[in-house]
Length: 247
Image (cartoon, rainbow, N blue to C red; front, side, top):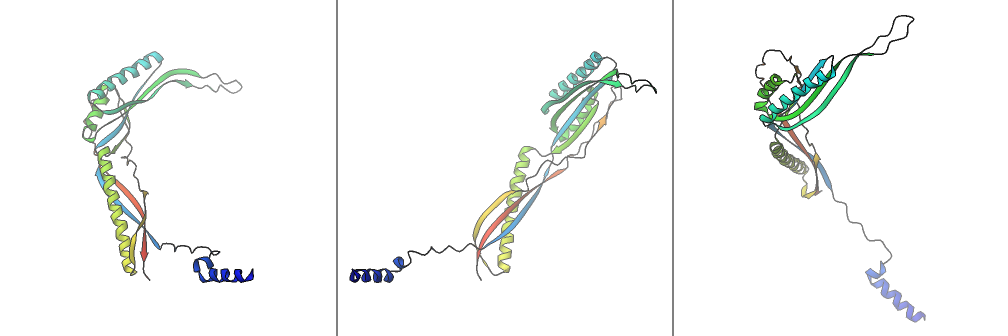
């Protein structure tokens, strides 16, 4: 039996693949990477105004207040539809009583609150071209709106998307240029891009300063407002990992 076992052992030791069957395979070398972050910015014109108008009425009788607010709302809504504004939406309707509280004189119990009148409020939001915003606001105030609660400006959707794509391209070029400069400075060789993360730097709307205005129903006509849209800065960021060789 021994004369057969010895040749078998010698055969295993002579063959490297068989001799090393018990050892773990060698791990591949981890790639050598550098990480850079590129940034791109594009300025785009704000051509869309987002406006909120309010209608408010007050008086001793709830039906009269409700009728006043409804009349104002209907007149302004009809005007805005005629002006073909976009995304016209009623965002608030509120009619509530006003109370007076009598704490009572010393030694006497406080009296129950008394209703002294009612306040009605309605708010509408809409979008319009910046160039038409002043004219529309002035006309709406004459038609029955008595407050401009807020206004912001922003790019049109198509312009924003184009600016985001341009900023993304600039960010990619910036990251690639940084990687190239760094590798050249260290006398290393670019072995290819291993990963790209383009989720950073997505912009949100940049509002103008909050605008507040109020007007009495009997006030003189307002001059047309001069609304300036300004610009929005669209920024995008890219994180890039580049493999290198050398040294």
